[in-house]
Length: 131
Image (cartoon, rainbow, N blue to C red):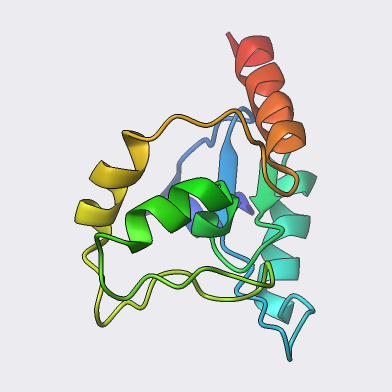
């Protein structure tokens, strides 16, 4: 991001070149393209040497393995089993995300949905290189 964004009074703050940004794509079945703001953020982050991960699915929750979602859905109201990676899994008006997360992390799975393995590998590689 441009240094002038990070001004405190009259001094510019230096931003590390080793940074990552994760953004929900917010894509929907009827709107599969990224909006202009997300595309601009990705371009600016990458221009500054950072890693920008925009989710392949609609939200970060779309990376959960289907078996995890199915298991939690039986205990938590407002959880939808997705048929499309651009569908919303958690109804924000019905689901307490913290409760959902506590249940989801207790379920073991070896599945790597969507581009999760690729993106995690890239993130880990960048973290190791930054040390």
